[in-house]
Image: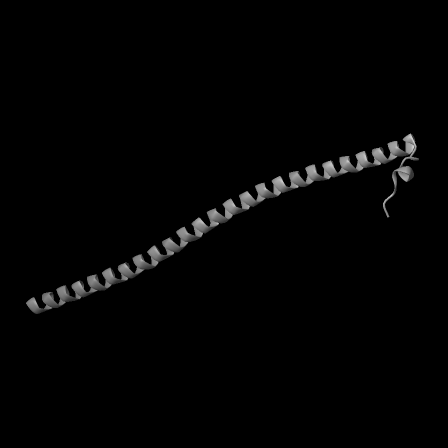
Length: 101
């Protein structure tokens, strides 16, 4: 139930001062809390940015590693093919040498 003006008027100056002081204190605490939360938010954003940068770096490194692994497998296959060709050529040369004797 809402108080009438007559019921509110009897507040003494001291009582009103106390109410205002408590209100002021609560407002100051709220301001301090908001400032702290903003600092925490900014810190969290900075940490998130660093984490995202590390993730991008790791993703790039992973992609480079995958590419190098593919290159290595391809080079090993090519090396094996070259070795087989050389062995075939040497075998052909040996058979030519034996046939010419």
